Image (cartoon, rainbow, N blue to C red; front, side, top):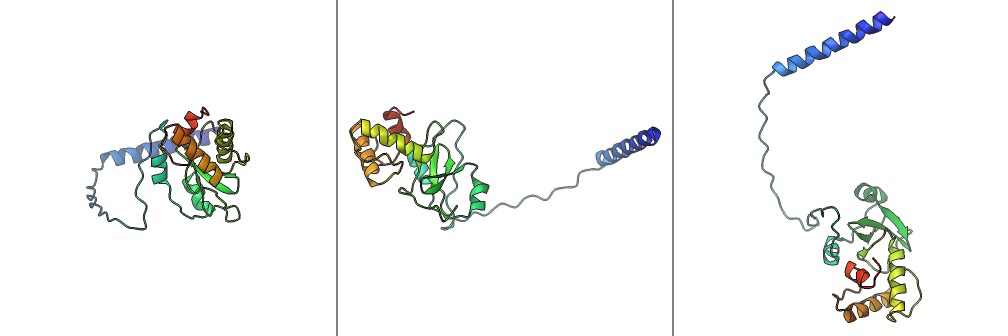
Length: 185
């Protein structure tokens, strides 16, 4: 039995060597030249977004430009983003340091006080980031509301007031400069 297995193995090795030598003796057939692609702008297609290098976070303006309020099913979201979480009343996807609403990931959970990017730090979920910002704004006497983890109108106004007084660009949203200025990084 051992001889049979050994002779079969030797036979298979000899066949593979013969096939490789035949492939090496062939001259490569000429490949057709690829045709130049024609590019047309389409109003339905979002502009291409260049990937950001590793360890470089998007600015809030770049994150806002990148974000598209698009509705997709759960399968589409999972194919395009690896981190999707349920926080507060809706699902969010993570992309380059920001959380974005994942519209139609689950239509039952689709409530967002703010339809835009939320800067994140320290692996916090969007509602945890908002809660930290609310707490910091309370300590600075800019926010008098409850600690809800929701980026509602009162929280956004408190953020805008703080940004103005701190000499930051006033966005009324949670961005890297605001988080850093509040000492939350």
